[in-house]
Length: 296
Picture 1 (cartoon, rainbow, N blue to C red):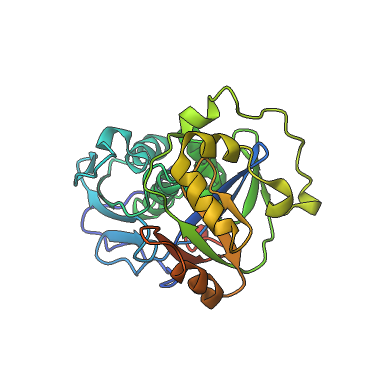
Picture 2 (picture 1 turned 45 degrees about the vertical axis):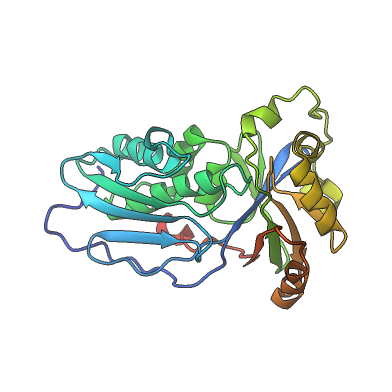
């Protein structure tokens, strides 16, 4: 039976890290995905858990409600509350664990919409992991992964909490060891709807399987990239410029593009050379999501 937080009980005793990276990079690689996710979060206080991905990432704040309602309490441009993956995740978790509690959810959206950075998927995973603790539901990771898959193919890898090769529709995750890196992410001023790219008639659909023992981003490539660049010239322009400086790729379905560097200073030097009007940020890669230990 699920454990619940009773009115008047103290906040759950979370032991959370206070530092981390600052972004998500998502590469769709020949029909599969490699997801690199970093987040930063301060300590929770008095019934509220606040999760943040540095100043660049989304911030989610959860406050326990005793009436069982789940609401997003702020307006977010481009993200109606009914379509917010964090809200949908909270509602699915509430049904799954049988709690009588609810939550007020505040979303501060910083990751660009339609950028291919997995922001909505990461928000959904954060809601599952955080509320599983706040409500003291005690669901194991395996059950949370099943709920995550109901929300979207990219959500399970964030619940898994490690760099991984995702296969099928996101249900098969193979841990992936990646070298330490700093990522420069450019953010073209366009939104790329995922559904439009995956349904495009010119999308390649006969890629050869990736062998995990020989995996590298350079060898794998991104099957979605040609379609994205053809349909969105701004993405192509950003990618062309970044490739003059380093090997670079589109993040999943775009619109963002990224490159990996050995040091922060090397990434910073390239960003400082970006043409006027070209924006971006730098994030350090992590091997484990800071929230991973919230589930077992």
